[in-house]
Length: 618
Figure 1 (cartoon, one colour):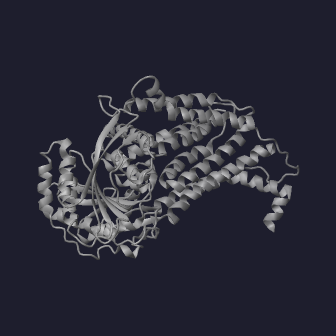
Figure 2 (figure 1 turned 180 degrees about the horizontal axis):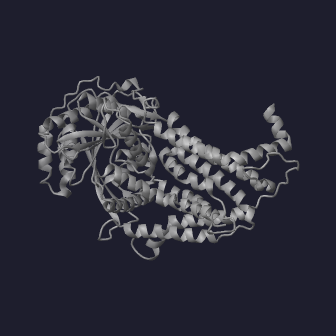
Figure 3 (figure 1 turned 30 degrees about the vertical axis):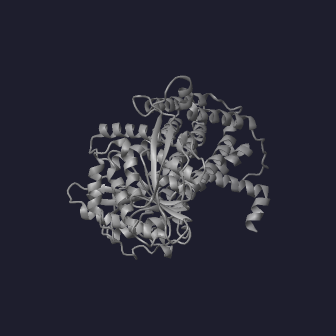
């Protein structure tokens, strides 16, 4: 009743408006810092949970695994080194056919919008070869995929695949078909095979042969990445394209099977054991997880399965310098066997456990119910500022308020009309600039010549600078229109960030943390362009632009995960290289594999930031 009486009484409502405007900035920054502190506290034991397997049918570690052909795998890897590269598919399928399996090949060509080598070749040609081990107990209604990516430095993966195929073909307990798949085209080859197998098309520029035959519905997939038989530790990778994650149960089952074989386990390449759960290490793993997920790039081949609701993991083996290797590789083979047997036990797709989580160690995780509220706190801060701008836009007399103003007023409010022309003028301008950033590489390749990674960087940076120079020249029809422009801008920003957060939390988090402070402080200069507050606002907006935030993330990644010592020149050089490589991967993934991160940043995030940039020059 009290709230209703305040809203219905114009004078009391105006007093409330005064209070909101007076304290909005302090409350907004308080909520912003509460969100940041909450995020930094997430890796603690109090806010994280111990992992568990929710799907009882998996029964990880319950079965006895007997793979013991590591010596054969090592000999086969040595043999593969002497086989010509173009004969590897035929050699592999002849081996697999000898085990009584159906063997097939698939040719594909990926036409890239970017030239990756000095010959300016913009296409990748490759071969996928696969064999199907038919289950004796069922009629090929379900299948498991065991896949490897073959390159000249990764022949051990293919050797272990063939060795496992030979061993698993002798076991009678399979209730699902097993598809042994190898590709020499990386992610493009895997994408070609998946599209052909599932009968859908979700990429652009990949031409491929139809598959000669299929198995049943793919229940799950396991990808192997082995460079040496001497194993230091194994990393379990779960991040998929566009920030999607595999079901947590399949990742936890993989960790449990690895621990049973006494193989050290890591998350994102960072070692973590059951007895070591320090805050600093957990925070480092969480930041790595957020950074990887935010890119929207598939972490490995398994990431392309996740987009089709096929749970998948990659076992990435890290090598050590001195070891005999035989025992280690045998234990790893038993780990893969155990993971396949876990999936073989499933009676339905994984659905009990979570698809939204952040890993901080091999045995602890952060639930979405705990990591999304900090982001919501920052959204509330933006919403509070937006509501205050709406009040200021509709009631001109509220614009004269100061910190010492009296909260009472005797006159009735005089509301003004919404300046639609000013809103549309800035909206159309920034939207055009965003599309220019997105389309500039394509315009260059169509009108001038082949696109290379360096040219891509020049196109994007050039179009970004052009838009930053152009937008400040767009003037509002009235100096007071900026309040309503900022209101609509904050409304669109919150909606966009919330939508991105529901699909890719990490990307939304990085954007929100970087863009919130410039948004809260954005305001026109009060007649004096050299005013210190105005200069600080412009500098803060520039330093927290999406482009520089992306570069800061690259610097942080290089500083944290690449050994550069205290040589800051080397740090910056490697950060620039990493930035160029990251931009290339984002562009290729968006144009070929269907990732939406590059598009979202160009046509959504960048235009919204340009509104903030424009307001500071009004």
